[in-house]
Image 1 (cartoon, rainbow, N blue to C red):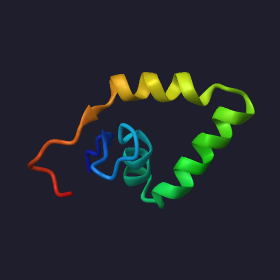
Image 2: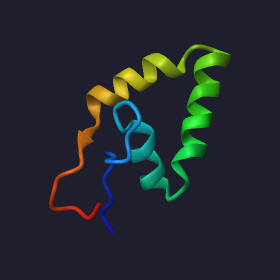
Image 3: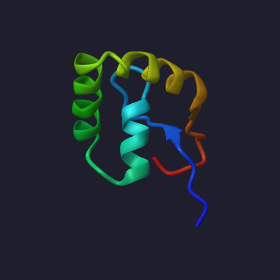
Length: 65
């Protein structure tokens, strides 16, 4: 099975956390909470989110939402 990581249509900002949650098959809220804790704890979450938002592709329309 060939899976690819895409930004999600379930977006709050850019769809990065939703895309990671879909890829890992977990609730997007859990991924968002972990990301907020990483941002507030060490500050690494914000630059990583920006890089991920730039690098990750948008989900094509032909893939099921």
